[in-house]
Length: 485
Image (cartoon, rainbow, N blue to C red; front, side):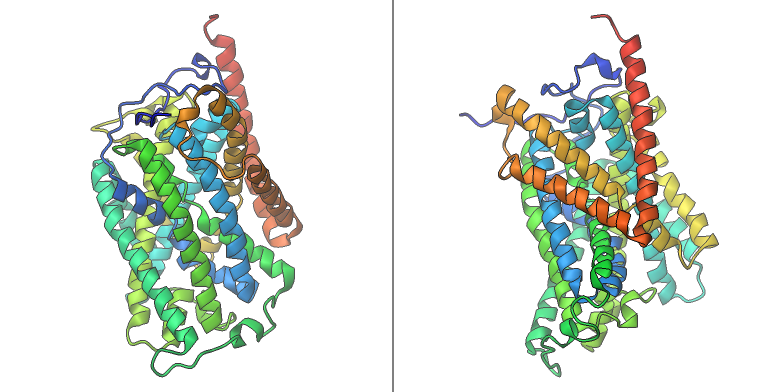
């Protein structure tokens, strides 16, 4: 069979959803308003840059404090789940590249209401993440410059990245490439130093053995309840990897770009996340106050314990860069998702306006919550980060569930109607897709059984139900007013 011809990204124009039959495998018409200025190297680093941020460098501290050494298991389990989800998403995105990514796939597989729900839920998640990254970065800078208000730094960061995202997408890609490269290099060096310290090879260090893994309450110091909290924290930390399939639509070769980026990003993320957690809890007692200390975090705590001169502050710089680049990537992902939804008649038309290849109104709208975080961080500087982190924990699971169901439905249709487009295939289909769905259902049940996460699950459920209801009403009205033929 001949190699499929590279295709341009496909988002439907701003017409009622009934203009195409839901569930068909034919790709929507090309949305040529967006430019294609991203290169393969940009995509690879965007895949890493969007996910290596507050959830890993800052949020992981709370996970370690709750789960203890078992946080390694939590990150391993959620890492396996996200690998399955990304494989499914990679399969669909390579077959049908679109800036709306899984929202487009859900619309084709299930119906317009599903695309509406998945897309806007993810938009909310990314907008909240923008605020989280900004607050985390502001805490670091305020630690360097005592007396400076955190809200002022959040405001400054928001203005800078609003400007970055209003510029050409090529500039955004170049920015993310270099800053994500710094993050990846720093984490790789962190892992090397950690492994050397564990082996007792570093000067003036002794091999810790299993003392920190089995002491102070053992591997599960807070029991299964702590493990569940750590699992939920790790699930949030992986959120954002989906942005690469959104960015692929603006790359030179969307099909090849998304296929390669998904394949390479999966194992790198698993190595960085699970490897980092294993190194940290082996070298640092899980109940060390520095792990959750404001302006510090588990990475800095480990380097300080190794007494490497200046390493802690250098790591703080890396963490700051990580937070800022993730903030930038999340504004980008949110704006493109909003633009795609509008292009498919799923949102206010004003957000769909594109100027010089950039959906500037969507960028502005996606940045509003970040500016709101300026006020929130001023009103509640001590607990707003944890509150926002918990509020969005279950949204990513809802998005993943839509991805899995969409892949189940679209795979068989694509094999039947356009098998040449399956350049990426889900492993052991459909068995592993069902395994992923069962894992998501299990996490939902665990959240329901925990007092700390029950309210979070309820909030996410209400958000999802509200969006689904609006989407269903819009779909019904569109069908009722659509053309007769």
